[in-house]
Image (cartoon, rainbow, N blue to C red; front, side, top):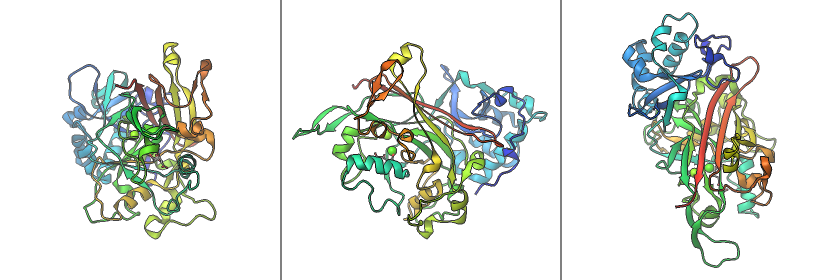
Length: 437
Ligand SMILES: O=C(O)/C=C/C(=O)CC(=O)CC(=O)O
Ligand SMILES: [Ca+2]
Ligand SMILES: [Mg+2]
């Protein structure tokens, strides 16, 4: 487990004023990674680290040769068009880079001028999917989501008996994962409308969102070797926001007995910035189970996981309709929750994924599953927020929604905040539904 060190000190001052702006997502204690380039140019994609309203261009930093040792190796690996090479180097090397950047960004640092020459304003940047994602697995770690959606899909058997023993997941699809700003046509597919006897192929009428976090795998494991829970977090590069768009009408017809397929693989949107577990260390919280629930099996249990395996990451979902956008309005908040309510931790997901000898590789992505909290306003999907489409959401200007309509945009936001620690933000994850093709 990552211990607090000098990089977490809330009193650190950066020489860049925007790193201290009220509510800034990217202070000197955060230092998340993305892949970016300047908008509208043909310049190469490369890795970058956020500070305030700027990006430290890792390709420029590599050319400048500011760092030495492990930190220099990490900068070189992060200079390419995907972060896989950096992810593969392992947590010792990422920590060295974090420490070197933290020190070079502090007021009075001798590296200030050299780093300043490597800054690109975030306002001038566009982003790419940060890694070559070989495999994407989506978990199901909110017991509240599993219960709520289970009640809608399987009224007689909402929560399956295995739920409290196995971190359930399914293999998703990597090819359709896009970065914030992704716009995709409404999916078509087979559905069996209520009362019909034969299915038909139609544009989905029950297009939904799923508020999730995405966990990027760093160093992989050899095929055949399980990762013990005590080492699981060393294999995690960091965490982003993830929207697992879901066509509920396709899902209801296709998902039994093998699980989600075309209802979920047409698009998945992630935020550009990957926040490291190091940055999140001040926001660890105890992992606890409700009274009377079984303790995790020994391979999913450790003192460190119990003491601080969960993270208090605040999450919010906003919706902006075409009418709101035309009126120049921002999004309307439809959900607020925290990752702390999850039933399984990051370490447990990763360990369970490898218990059978399955090999994870640098750049693989694990979805947390929809992060619904215990109350209805904390639900991370429209199907829950509207009780299966029965209770429309009331939006500003008198509009209503049950499921998404063409032109709707959804934004996920995440941040950590508490007295005595720096705010750690995830930025935003936007996606837009286009008409069916
Ligand atoms: O319970 C079901 O049959 C379906 C569940 C989901 O649609 C959720 C899924 O993708 C996993 C998750 O996001 O929690
Ligand atoms: Ca999901
Ligand atoms: Mg999806």
